[in-house]
Length: 153
Image (tube, rainbow, N blue to C red; front, side, top):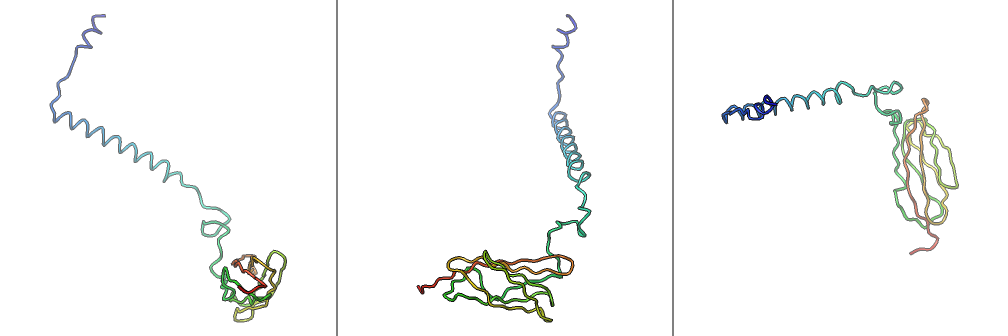
């Protein structure tokens, strides 16, 4: 019991310089510990690239060689005609699928990659999707919303 009483009375008088130096040392050790944790959690154990994709990115990304551009129709277009021209450009000689809720059409792009066709519309809102496929099975899709009204506003 005597030793405990003697230990509780022990105090160390530190100069202010020694106290500040000890606090800086504790801060540096804490920062080194956090840097070590960062290395372990974020750098050393990075997820490996997907084995099934060439560049390590998502498999569903569109290939760079497959292009699709729509010249007509524009998105959210209002028309008073029951048919609309769908035209655009893609990689030459590819199959182009044009779909809506109630109609599907398959056409082929020409040697320059251009394609166009007349597409029937139903009254009110029409969601048109244009999809191209290459020989590898890759695809690229663009969508447009067309509003058809029989009555002119």
